[in-house]
Image 1 (spheres, rainbow, N blue to C red):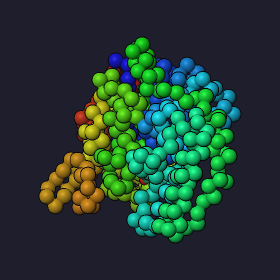
Image 2 (cartoon, protein in one colour):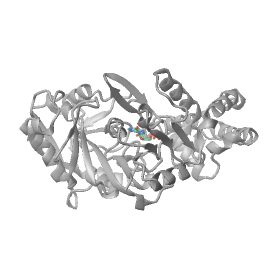
Image 3 (cartoon, helix red, strand yellow):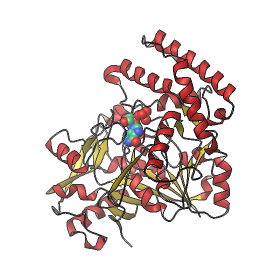
Image 4 (cartoon, helix red, strand yellow):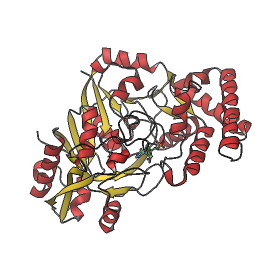
Length: 426
Ligand code: IMP
């Protein structure tokens, strides 16, 4: 069976980019199925760092075709910038990147509306990336969105863009009380971006299904994490799409019967960017040390990530809705700085103990983490190339996570480079 789905099983930033890149050498197709340029995938190849926001990490491999599926929202200006950057680094894009004709586009007004809404929410803000993701998905569901196929017909695009621009200005001025946007000022650049992207537009649904029929190896790459899923995450502190594996079916136009591997990516501790509950957050010196050691700053916005202990009930919730067949533990090396490592194994609640993160944030607020403490290993792991050569306390830590998650751990990552990825338990 050809399709593997990769999902983040926390609040994003689990290190999916590195694992997608690692697995891409065995793939024919790597496809993104949701999200937009709110994502930030950092990939290190031979010491060189590449940050991708919208384009699947497969683009860094010569033999891989990268697909931006219909479930993705495509920032026209952002995508062209990213293509230029990748080409500037010597990678080929044209002929290797397909963009779904049904993908909805993000226009400058989506970002402006997103930021106006966040400002108006004040202390109740979501902490979005401000990239217009939620507003683009909202327009899609309201059946007013503009799709990539509209770029094929200049008149249609211009008409829809002007209608949308006028609508946004009403909302901006009358509801948010901020300045209107000069609609015409953005038009020329958008049309130029449209021209650049036109040759890459494709019926990606047929492409994906043909690839499946001809038994190609396909990786479907989720962005963000399952705890940010609009249905299963900590609503309303979520993104506006479906990172959970079901999103791969609707976001690429493929049947669930073609998916057999679902690989969950899990960081050895927890991080979160933006607002919303995070029960194991360490707002103290230890949290600060983890942030510094792990370089926990957003690849897209540069924001400091909130850091804390591994939260088994939260990961278990993500695994429950994802049906993961295997797990990759990332950033184990970051914990080398600690002599003792607490793990949250469950929560105390007013109605007793639970081992699953509740869905309702007001229930989450009532939960108190129950910790057990593991011994640290306090030595550098970055040079380790075989799981068997990890220090025993590190092996014990990974095995305890495996027991708590109830899913086999297939790989452990001890650094950002492709070479720092160890097969586990085989
Ligand atoms: P939005 O996706 O920009 O609407 O932001 C909604 C929430 O998702 C905010 O808490 C963001 O910080 C979070 N978010 C969006 N993209 C990512 C990501 O790639 N990694 C981690 N958090 C993200």
